[in-house]
View 1 (cartoon, rainbow, N blue to C red):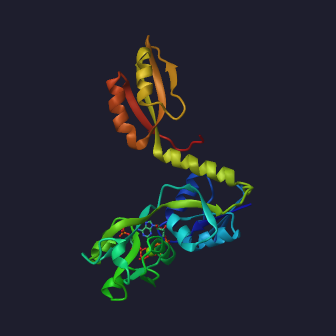
View 2 (cartoon, rainbow, N blue to C red; view 1 turned 90 degrees about the vertical axis):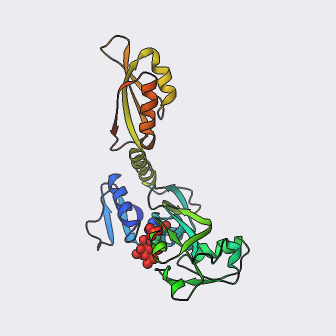
View 3 (cartoon, rainbow, N blue to C red; view 1 turned 120 degrees about the vertical axis):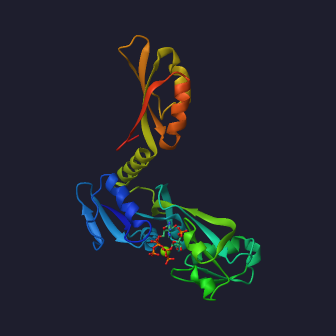
Length: 282
Ligand SMILES: Nc1ncnc2c1ncn2[C@@H]1O[C@H](COP(=O)(O)OP(=O)(O)OP(=O)(O)O)[C@@H](O)[C@H]1O
Ligand SMILES: O=P(O)(O)OC[C@H]1O[C@H](OP(=O)(O)OP(=O)(O)O)[C@H](O)[C@@H]1O
Ligand SMILES: [Mg+2]
């Protein structure tokens, strides 16, 4: 059985479970369940704190896990990223009262509150800045107002929490993060079932990010249309009953669909439509 760690709570939990369900794996019914066995797919899921997942996977106790890139780096666990999962994105940044600092160079001798002490200490060391790190578990934004720190280093997603605390970001972003699938560093032979898990998750990512586009076009204009939308491999071209016309089917990125429809129209495509992809294996 492949042993997979899944976030049990927090920002990554729901989206991770949803992605695994979409990939065809059984998932727990209630948030109280600590484990779930999917016998059909020969996978055991363990629901754990995402911060701890890097530790379990790094130790080799569990084969793979889903966690945040920032949490993996923060833990200094012996784990490496297999693939990004396209959700749970955030930026790790410095913030403080307006005017307190402009860049990391202004932080020498200051007190910086964070729940990501590992990431912060590594970043300060890389920049040769000597500052005091105040480790907190959460609600880090309150640390400045309550006087235990001069600035903070924290996860920013929408920026709402910072604004409410009267703080603003300064300096360059420290780290970009998203949910990632991790394995123990340097494991040569992949455990049984890992290839299947990775292929299925890649399939979910493609199904989410791509749509199928169909259109009709004169046969002599197919080359021009294919230059606009070449597809992942090559478009499918089928004859139409109407003489000299063909039907074309091609996968395109969801975010590009409207722009491509405009361009395809320009080169003679008609009856252009897009449909969602529910599952795929590329
Ligand atoms: N708005 C957000 N707040 C916190 N973490 C976020 C956010 N958006 C994405 N993330 C990512 O989620 C992971 C943190 O998840 P984690 O479960 O540890 O904390 P949390 O969501 O703050 O939960 P809690 O504070 O309740 O423990 C990190 O990888 C972080 O980058
Ligand atoms: O930029 P935003 O969209 O406002 O999101 C970022 C905030 O959300 C998280 O806090 P969470 O609610 O997890 O509480 P915590 O600080 O106690 O972890 C994170 O620690 C930031 O405080
Ligand atoms: Mg939090």
